[in-house]
Length: 122
Image (cartoon, rainbow, N blue to C red; front, top):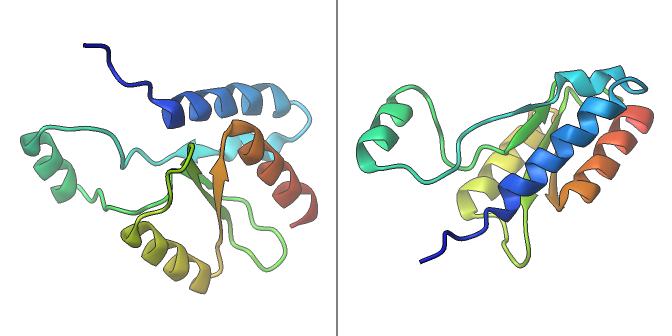
């Protein structure tokens, strides 16, 4: 049986390749990083990661760059008809209340566009 295609992971990889090259013109992109909360894990590994602070619903990416009224930008990557979960929506709301921009992006191109707009315009 073939493994399912990890579309969101592939889009994140493409986004980070884009950011690597764009950082020559937009140096703030060097601060973009992935928060490895997702993925498939066995119960034992999931238990240890939870003890270490992994929390369901935290967005995939963070750009710790302040712009305008925002302290930074969180991005949740999605693909196809995949929508944010209830725990993700709760995180989005709470992060927003703390002064962070939070955006759901479908595909790396949308995430790249969002990053450029956020950095250039705040």
